[in-house]
Length: 336
Image (cartoon, rainbow, N blue to C red; front, side, top):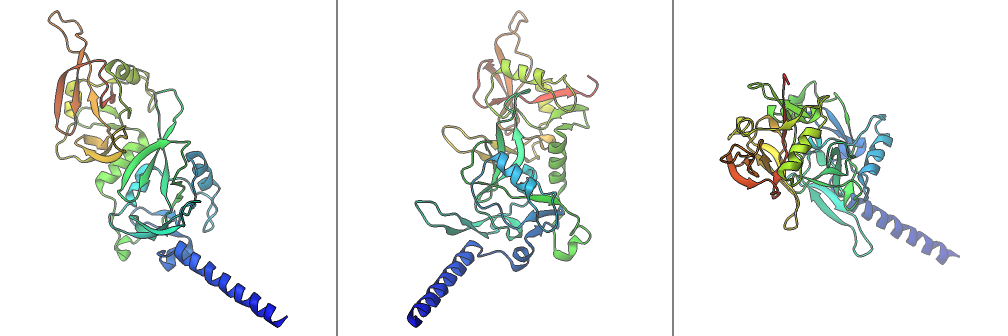
């Protein structure tokens, strides 16, 4: 009986050591304060972040539910963050400890993510921000952030591979004295980007024109781009239209670095990129202009002009059925 008891004790000791080793590997780099509290407050924004994501694959809808159901630190108002909120906590070379979970084919292993606050990640966090394929249709795509490059990427809401829920809530805990912890404040650009996305539009103070906060996000020919803007219902208005070339040129700003994206294609993954456009509008390609170029009789020629916000140049003579990287960026006059 004695040797059996000793064997049991040995097995229990081994099990305890294994459990501790697994816990250590699963949470190697969380700072003690973040881990013990279960959350981290960003002193630059006052947002309170859960100390870790949910830890396993889930689609967008389940990520939304996970955060809505979360009860942490005595609060029940947790939510899935907007895409710009996620981007604010990206920090190049932060190297916060995380983990890539195990599968049937491999063991879990430690990993690092470029995220502030030593938040513990195990994958790519969903945002609450969605993409509408076209006006009047339910959204099927949503944004997430890849924290090794700081890229915002979109995926079908039904996708769950390596997707996570990282929850956030509004807090004023650290806003009273941010300098005490060496916090960085939000830049004017970040504030403007947040305001533009929250409202869904930007008004150019120099012209009074109201611009949709982003283009349509996918290849589109001139006819469909015109219809996209005609059908758009945004900010309580229905009189959106495709912008003219002069209007597009009016919001080009060589010094602006507005966050946008080069969408995923058959040749490459989606990647973040900047555009020289005012108002922090979110662009993904060339903007069609209206109307069509007139022929020698003054009639529509079947050709139209697109505008490149990287080079600040119009491209004349594209056939209206052309769809390679062409987008619809909609506008309306404040008095229209």
